[in-house]
Image (tube, rainbow, N blue to C red; front, side, top):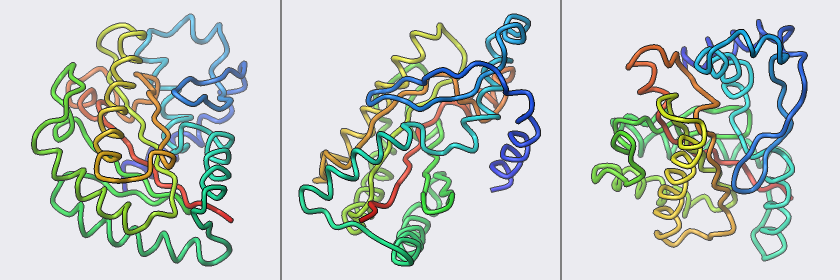
Length: 235
């Protein structure tokens, strides 16, 4: 929690630096407009420095990467097929109960459970998810995901965004593909436990959303992660 608070403060401090051009982030189901540093500032940065600035200022406080439009479309589709939505104070109460259930199930697994408003994000670090340069789930990670799936089955009034992230080792294109394959591996495992496919948004962020410096191995290990964000379906 301290780490996320520190990043949020850093993001606020850099707000005035991010008045550059708007662009659109990528993913399986589209992105959302993001503010990046002006081109002249980017030209003076290497890729690691640029990624760290973008990640701290945008990704660390965004939580959900797929954007409001994508989640709203998914919400409408789910309500249309009979999945009930939540309204008013029921939303917070529902997510409070789901958060408690996830914290109990994730205790001792190394998974960090973070609450951001009405959304819940599970930060799954590299040491329990995938080997280096791999999109194959590590054997010990299966039990962790099964615990997540059990909670998602009980609390089925949520959209599930699975986002893959990498460090900066390798090319941008390769890391983007690797992050997408990792998101797909996690999402497919969860869907294989009987969860409705229409609840899921799978997205790869590549190396663009670091939560630590890529200049050290410890920082790169933190950046190699999968984040699962649970968004309540609103009526």
